Structures are given as structure tokens and as C-alpha cells.
Image (cartoon, rainbow, N blue to C red; front, side, top):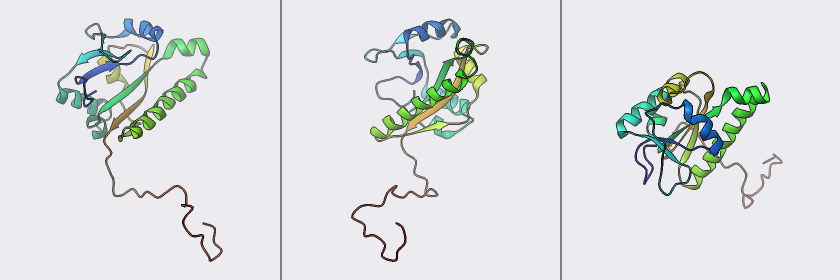
Length: 177
């Protein structure tokens, strides 16, 4: 997180369940703290960083894209990979990605609700993410990354309403609207 009011720039962890945190903890680098963030249930600070350092790291991890470096925050979604596939079989691979995608959809909606924009990042470097967190092997995998920030308008992209407004007159030349 680099531009979130009330939070110091740094690396944070938001485990979705206590059991997942218990499984992840032994895999994390020993220098990373797991300090609870006062007033934000379940959020744990791993490391505090100088904003420029965090910006540089975020850009590097996300294929040198400014969208990650300039966002309010960037998210990397980790999954308990080996054990899940072992327990549920190869089809669990799709399920893990589907679950990450659903979380991404919620982030899109929440960003919009707060006047921000979100985007999934299709390019990120797994190995440096693992190195940053101290992860080894494939027990935990980085599956999907996402950023939330201020909208950047691109004049090359055209937008139009999804539906014709009801108060718009129907075409009179027999064409479908």
C-alpha cells in the first residue's frame, strides 16, 4: 500500500482465514513482521517502506508498469497451491484462479463505489514476488494481481452508453435501434 489514508506505505497481508495465515506464516521470510493494524481487522503489516522504494518495487514486480507504481495500492493474491491441488486434484487449479478472479470483481466494484478505478494486472513476475516474501517452492503461488487508483482517462478509448435511453425517439426508417 502506498497511498491509503491512515496506513504507512509498506507491505501488508490480508489473510482470508486464520487457518490460511497459520499455513502461510512458516513460509514467510523471517524478517517480515506480522503486526496487526489498529482499527483494521485482519490486516497485518509485514514491512514498512519509504514510498519511493515501494513504488520502485511495485513497478518492478508488475513488469515495469506505471499503473502498479502509481496506484493507491496494488494487490497480489496468493493461494495455497500444492496442498490444494493435492487435496482436490488438478481441477482445483481452475478453481483457484476463478476465486482470485471473483475477488478481483469485488475490487472493481468497490473501487468504482469509492470514485476510484481498478484493474487486473496480467503481467507480474512470480519469482521476485516469492523472493520479496521469502516464499520457496510452489506451496504458495502468486495467482493474480490487481491495482486500485485514480482513473486515468485515455482519449484513444471511446465509451458509449450500454443501452439506448427510453426517452430517445425510436428510429423512423425501420432500422433496429
